[in-house]
Length: 264
Length: 265
Image 1 (cartoon, rainbow over the protein chains, first blue to last red):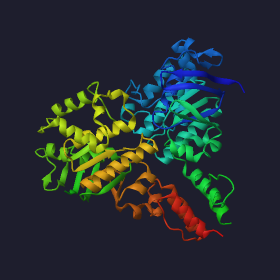
Image 2: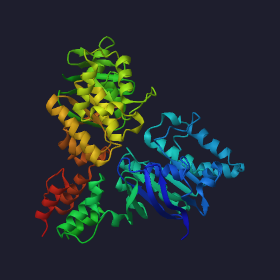
Image 3: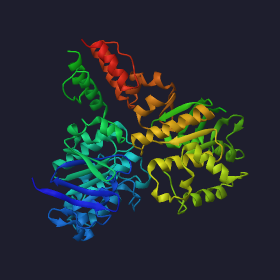
Image 4: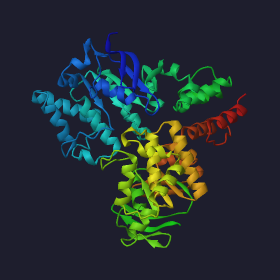
């Protein structure tokens, strides 16, 4: 599969050191690590918010040679820790404003708007003031604004932080749907649980990649991960410890199946 | 001192009746928790009978209450655009008119208490890590000699090692200095394993209050009102219900594993 993004020997100040990473088109990559590991900086470099020295290549084009407008069309991001970009007093106006600037005909515009509202389950919230929303709704609106123009790449920085379990599930339902539509997702997260759905998990520590691979393979390195301050998802932790006692053979993420494995 | 609310209302909040004893480690969860914390902090004009010790929550006592019941916000905000920690603290002392005999000594002792060395005073605010920010926030709160510390999602942005550090500090403040610690969080694992008592909020009132262990082991209640259930409880409950095996409830996964080991063939 072709590479959507290729990072070659990226160094940035003293924060990121010698990063090499290929991100195939339509893949879902999770980047995790402790506080100050460099994950947010990496997301900001990929989004063009920070400038790099020609080490990031977006579909064969140097990212820093793209005009910002062109880059934004292709690569979109949600970074909740930045100040909020809302300008209007209703969710509807925010979304329509972006659509108005895409030069679409009114039918396409209407359909796109309807699709967004239904995908993000926002039909009861269109008239609310985006500045006054609960965290979960705010994140959903930010996501909708980020993908309404159909970018090729979506960058996410810790968007599930402080969400409740059912809210996280809804966010992942939306991300799965976006992926079906062809988008490439790169997600920085401080919660390893979020990484279970990714194709690939990359662990950063002190600005370098210390582990990368399929999430369940990376998560086997429990002692290293614990040492750098990351906590394993409960079912992975339970599996590895039960394996240690020879009670099961492999990691089992499903609780029902786990219980049936232990007590047939 | 005890915080005691009897039938207190404010905007959508209603029928708030509870008391929080001195030296408690209390967790608060459910929608509206940040605003609830602000009620305790004397942020709003309340209706009904609200007391901190023998002080009534009213305009006259607000200043005193807010110093004794100190709130630590979720994010550290450097809203005055000051460069170093030293400048920032000097500004705060002036702004809040905290008169103290020897401010420098007081600041250093607060720093010592939270485990920040005095060299931090010269550091720039922008370079602090998330856990250093939290330690600084707590040190600043300690300057007004609070008896109650209220923290809004104090661990959300911290990795596990940093969480451990802040937890240890808060426990020290509680055990050694008898401070009351109140934290709001949406993380059920954290609330279950760490707090002593819980308030579960629903529809802007307290739906249930009591001992943390009892409430989090009441899976029927948690399920019925859609609260997050700690995964270790969920697993134990499943084993008990579906396999009829009497596992005990545990907080540490290693204890759970030992218990499981005893019960498999």
